[in-house]
Figure 1 (spheres, rainbow, N blue to C red):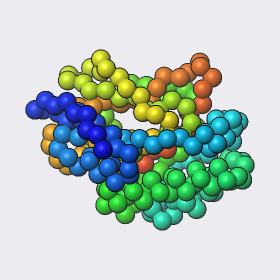
Figure 2 (tube, one colour; figure 1 turned 180 degrees about the vertical axis):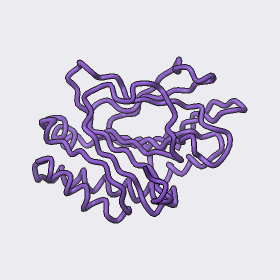
Figure 3 (cartoon, rainbow, N blue to C red; figure 1 turned 45 degrees about the horizontal axis):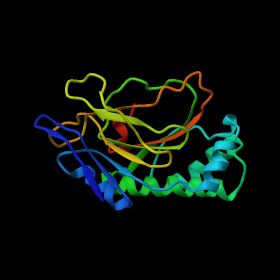
Figure 4 (tube, one colour; figure 1 turned 60 degrees about the vertical axis):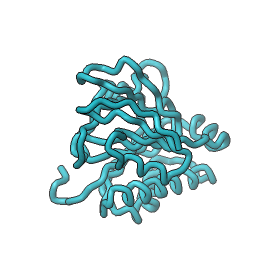
Length: 211
């Protein structure tokens, strides 16, 4: 595990890059604003998902317990017409595994899962999410962009998360100090013909507080 970290007293802007899922727990370190699980995309899977008709990509948003993720994502795939194939099984299993890892790190009984096909400039402004923490994994297309900001302005240095690599980001509701000074956004792709498939996981600690 490598830790690339810059620091200033009033904000956490460190980014941990890890080659193993257990390294995502670095998000709990005071100066760490994000953790990325760097993993190699499987060529066969990537060719398969990149070649799919965008209309077949699963799309949905649901609040559920982690052990219900596998069946729920399967249903989303069936509803979208995603072809039954070993690659589809791999996608479903990977999402379920990420949900288990994230729920364990956050000690969350429920998760809000969003699986979205994106072809527009959704969330193109740099920001920090109004959540405790958020896991984002882009299975198809350009990954999340991020960078440090000392004054809330757009970052001067911007990096892009590799396709297929999960990034775990602190939000504004993170309980510890200092607050995150790392901003992120969805890459602007409108007009390029690109369609991304993005998984977003948020912890849900109290169902009564969900909008």
